[in-house]
Length: 117
Image 1 (cartoon, helix red, strand yellow):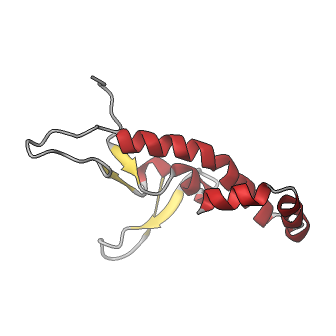
Image 2 (cartoon, rainbow, N blue to C red):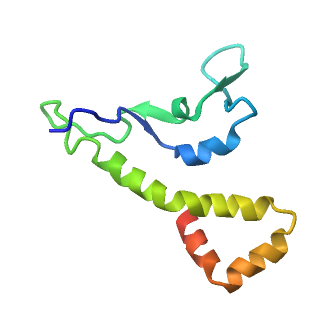
């Protein structure tokens, strides 16, 4: 039986969150449950996550297939993250139109688009 499990499971992939980092590698956020509202900063590891977010327990309170969904998502995220980065690079480039036409013509866009869906 596996001893180390991911407990804080992200519902927004960290590879996407990291694109919002400032110069100090922190991401700005607001905790809407606290008053007064104020801008806070943290790392991607602490945002958009919840303890055992994907976990299911049986009637006895035991985990069913512990971390299975997390592992599947992790594998999937590893596959789509380079395509996400490519999309961001293309869209933020000054030559967007030219670069976009190029990736459409070489059939790369279909793969990127499918990954983003």
